[in-house]
Length: 85
Image 1 (cartoon, rainbow, N blue to C red):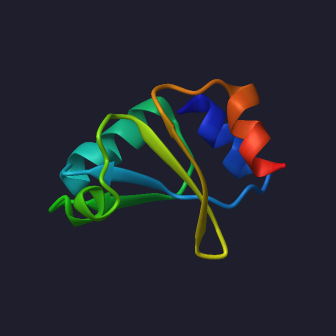
Image 2: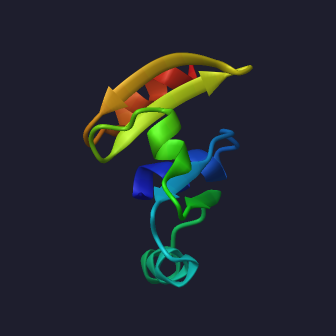
Image 3: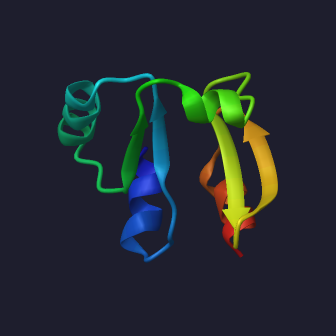
């Protein structure tokens, strides 16, 4: 999450989607961590099903509507940056 906050502050465009979480839990997580990145909530799991999410976290790198990469697991800053170059 700190890496994502830094990317957002640097002007990188992305969304973090929280799967099957309550809005209050996501808000608490963001507030407690002091994170400032755009977050969406997939409360019903419809996106997880549509994208066939099989592990958490799972990262989908989408550009102009095309999936450019999918990575499972925790990613370090360097790996994230590879997708944003």
